[in-house]
Length: 207
Image (cartoon, rainbow, N blue to C red; front, side, top):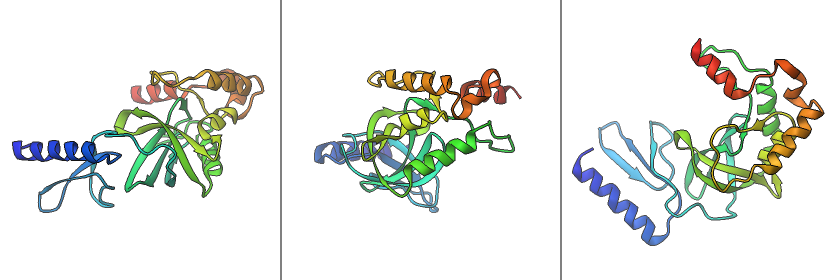
């Protein structure tokens, strides 16, 4: 990136912090080869990416609209002039098959369940920073219902076994997972043949 573009990016960061604008700064290159920066939603067409995260945090309690559901633990939402992807913090759902790979058992059921839970409702978020692929890590709420926790209670998500944000408290999630496992709900009916999403992903990489 040229020094001029770097300077423009820094100016945008300073201005956004000064006026209290929330969200990300996105960057993309248009068809004329011109680099753009914006704190509003990136263009519908084109390859935009977030280059600065969470300048002041999204407004607490702000309502968002779900515009796409990728799988049981990843959705896209829009609001406050932004469109961004959320990774449901603290949970891991069975993997949908991509690029010719087969679905993990109960991955379609997990996607159907979160679709049912979200419905056409607006949602609010409790944020826990940014995860891989510039995804917002968050608990999703429909009114007072914690959708992340409901996925675990339904037996269609396990507690995420990787590194979790420091402020995230997984106690209720482990309790819900134990109950779902003990009662063989959802994916837990598989018993000893059950594979965690993490193990499923590692095995796919080795193939």
